[in-house]
Image 1 (cartoon, rainbow, N blue to C red):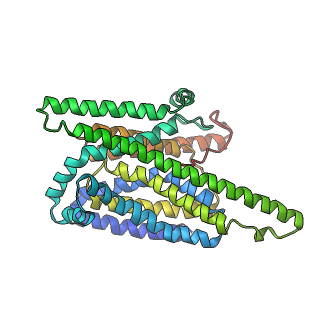
Image 2 (tube, rainbow, N blue to C red; image 1 turned 180 degrees about the vertical axis):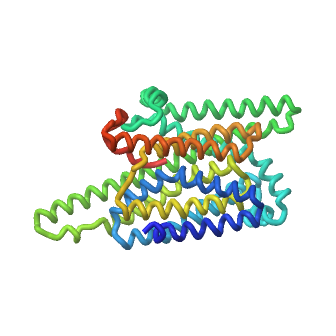
Length: 381
């Protein structure tokens, strides 16, 4: 069962790691491995959401999601999207960006380093909004309660996360401008770029969140109609199997899943820029991670078990928060990519260990005063 579900992921992992060694040696292998773990960790909640919705769809639409959806998620978001970001910020054509990364790595690195403040500002703001919206939300299950309880109460203030994000962006831009001025003003004009890129990251987050909410509302409407049809079927004696989530309802589910998948992909792709600017290593690491997310989705659907490790969602979002701060810091200061990657891995491992301890306590009858119910399933970015 396990080999059948994760077989392709294991094969892609082996090929990807071998390619990394040939491309950049053992250091490249380490970066790809960290990126893969990071992508899996940050997308775990994505797999949970996908599985919860996918199990309601008929076999045809499940296959569509797991085939066409893979092309969109793996090749579109994880492979093409990083190239597009580099191309736009470095003012290159996508083909030229890929060509430079292979044939003129020094020139490519110079261009990407020059464009890094814009990439870091855009990505830092996007990831920061994901973290803030999570930490300010009231939820049944809390991991670090001493932090999450008071922040959840503060979260009742409307638009608080947007205000905090904008304040952080202003501080980052002003700090960058001040540092540039002290060093002769050579990069003073980039302070405006940092500010504009950060606003663009915030707008992108709001658009993606709005699309997710739109399709979620459409999905709820269709599910309500299907539920009414199911009740009618019970009254008239029809077989329940004749009333399935297919057709229009399944189509909206598919669109909703793709929007969610794309939005969840943003954190992994943008977080990867905090670890490396090399689009080859980024594509290998994120591609491997995305394959595991798809396999995990199938596994959760077939096993019928969701949210066994309830704190993983928290750990993933704390990792996102840490990456957002690191990205904003790297606008002015350099941070080793291995350290950056390990921060996220440690937070994920910590949350996993806490989940295991909670499960053991519940099994032993010790209870858990965090919650008596299952963790909430996230419904957007």
